[in-house]
Length: 453
Ligand code: UD1
Ligand code: CA
Image 1 (tube, helix red, strand yellow):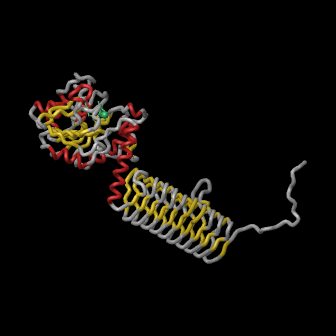
Image 2 (cartoon, rainbow, N blue to C red):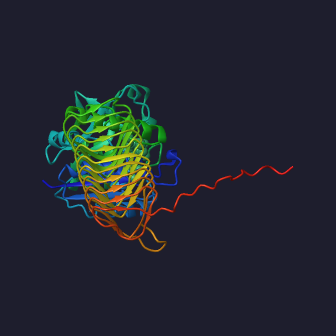
Image 3 (cartoon, protein in one colour):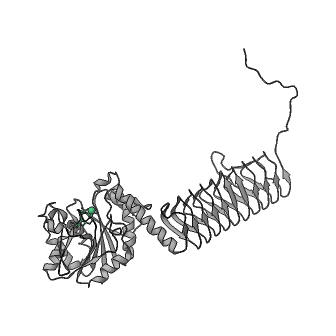
């Protein structure tokens, strides 16, 4: 039986105290709603419909790349009313799985267990036992079977003592669900159309309702304020780090690392404290990431060490390179194998071939550097003339002395040596020493100026 997913995301999220819609708040670098969409993709549903309302245009614009169906809930009249907005285009023959845009940590296995627990004509509701169930809907069972849900505000003291709560996540056959939703009334303490009343209706109609308990409280966590957002962030980070440790990655401290995207690691990778990974990052076997590094959308080759305090973005390194401390690789930096990049070196949109060294205080932009090249301290490729960027080409085994300015476009031949302090604006031939330097003079008998009386 085909499945239609409905994700409720119309609430304002006032407790977040933000100008952004709640479901757009970032968790591990992606909006809450994106997490829900991502895990819902594992279900294999034929249709995912997001019910939106508050800040809807912003939500739709940010998720434009996703193939989704959108249903507008103009007024937030309750969770039952919200689901109803998605029903007109949901085929009667489908099963409906209802998810929440502010519940980001559910695991696909848990959803699969919920769907597997009940037949296509039955209802399933995901529950969990909470140490402190305050505020949640309580699950009322009789002889083990689910009878109905009662909201905190409508519950008796006896019902409030129940610790099994409704997570809100449920599945039901579309045809029956539509009928139950149509019969909902708002005669409760909040004057809302409660989706949860569907459970009692189903039981009355003789439909079996299965209550499936989630394994952990973390999974069903709903995010309402920034404290919960921060809690969810730590919980998710811990989950990501645990997965990597199972795959053979070592962390100096699993609590002090942030993965905001997808981090793929080879074997025996070591990650020290306060490393931040954003976007798609891959680390080859035996790579070492020292402390305080930010690495975004980059590949670090096998055996390469990123020393402390580097900033690396949209770059690639080959194997056995040494980068940093304090290096910056900007978009388009591509280093081959055994390359060394040292402190206070910035490399942008440049290739550096095998075994070359750029060790201190240097800017390399729009350059093609051959293999075995040594670039001395304080060298600058002057790539920008104020209007256009120009290329610098340095041949294999060239030696660039310290404090050289390479005014692009310019080419340094293979094996050339450039004398320290030169400003090179014409191409330098291979194998020769080229230098540009004013003659050094000493003025005999020169007197230092004195302060006037
Ligand atoms: C709901 C459940 C409660 C459950 C709890 C779990 C109902 C009536 N109650 O309570 O049993 O324990 O979730 O967290 O369903 N939303 C809309 N449109 C609306 C109202 C809500 O899209 O008109 C969305 C909200 O954005 C939110 C979600 O539905 O993401 C839940 O709504 P909320 O008002 O927070 O329900 P709870 O009171 O938490
Ligand atoms: Ca809620």
